[in-house]
Image (tube, rainbow, N blue to C red; front, side, top):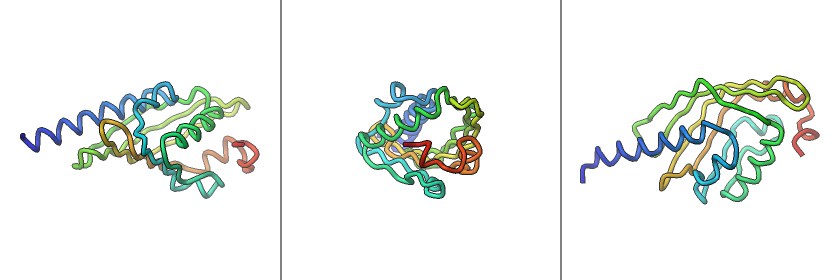
Length: 146
């Protein structure tokens, strides 16, 4: 088997999974694309008293489902998917936003490292600006994200 062709096919498959993930931020769209050993990492989340790491598909889905309640209608745009030379790893840049239940506007620019195994996402490491979250939700996030 041609190793280069195999790596190209794996990369193409993972790009397609990433495109599907980025097309809509909801569990109906995401659930079947998530590996059972999924790890979510948000390196800056601890600066606003939110978890910086969630492990396992069940716990990740519960966490994301809870967070999505506060980001109704969040959409991503200007999505750029970058390959890395490693077929299981992509770097994705994008912007997103929505109108919050309070009427405030939320906007964010993200960079994400995504890793894949068996055609499913196993790592989602997302970098975002915590100040944008504070601007939209206020400084007492513990009272907001309960």
